[in-house]
Amino acid sequence: MLIRRSPDILPSEITDQDLYLNRRKFLTVAGVTLGAALVGGKTAPAFSALPPSMAVGESLLAAPSAFPNLRKSPLSARESPNSLRDITTYNNFYEFGTDKADPAQNAHTLVTRPWTVRIDGEVKRAQSVDVGTLMRWSPPEERIYRLRCVEAWSMVIPWVGLPLAAIIQRAEPTSRAKYVEFTTLNDPKQMPGQRRGVLDWPYVEGLRMDEAMHPLSILAVGLYGDILPNQNGAPLRLVVPWKYGFKSGKSIVRIRFTEQQPVTSWSKAAPGEYGFYANVNPAVDHPRWSQAKERRLGEFTKRPTLPFNGYAEQVASLYSGMDLRRFF
Ligand code: MTE
Image 1 (cartoon, helix red, strand yellow):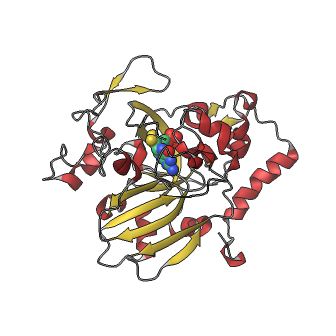
Image 2 (cartoon, rainbow, N blue to C red):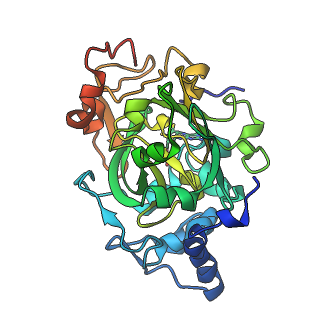
């Protein structure tokens, strides 16, 4: 990173997503006092301390959860999550500005409902679905994952995620599908950062089919048990915890199955710096900085970065026989 260069929806598609999103409206109308609310058993930061756009995710601070009876996953990391404040105020989402504080300040202009995702390419039948449908295809689970940014900072985030494999199975890719491409919304009216040529918009990311089918890969719809805040990629964002954070495209509107490896935004912008695979690898430095260590938000000393971000046992076999210096 750090490169500075210059829907229509059918009523029948509006489903149980309405149910949980309506809670937000209720909270606003009821003027709920949020400051002392608990999140995940911990005291949440005072609401007044959060930036204005947190109104977008206001229900985050109110229990009970927007996702009742959320299944806890055995795939979760056994580490303490970062605070809600860290996770929602230190972001990369260049569609809303290139400083870490910009997305929290600016992402309130993103309209996340209604939201339709186009599923097409190498599939038996192209279709458009809403987030509620995806949630029925693949029920949400709590997944506490480490996130390691290529810029050498990291966090632990308690996502609410939909296992991607179940969604892919329902999408019915053909035998020609070898990759999955994920595309972010392209709308400079809602995403003012897209008026600047920082990247060739829209933001595109991709995975090999076996990576996308891996049990760790999810589409996040929430965090800390509640609806995903806009700055974290609402309403739907990819999370692949063994890869650098830039692989996790935010605010996804299209999932396309392809025979050829997708051309991804960062590998197009700086091919010598950001590869398609982008597996966390402390042994391969970024051309401009070391990847051996990382700064976990909230910690004073740097910690060593682990191969595949600590998920080597689960994912290293996906890359057996591959030269990970060449396929970085
Ligand atoms: N997705 C889009 N659409 N635009 C972006 O700028 N930044 C990526 C990724 N997804 C980005 C994006 C990067 S570099 C990182 S590290 C993560 O989002 C950060 O996610 P977070 O802000 O929720 O921590």
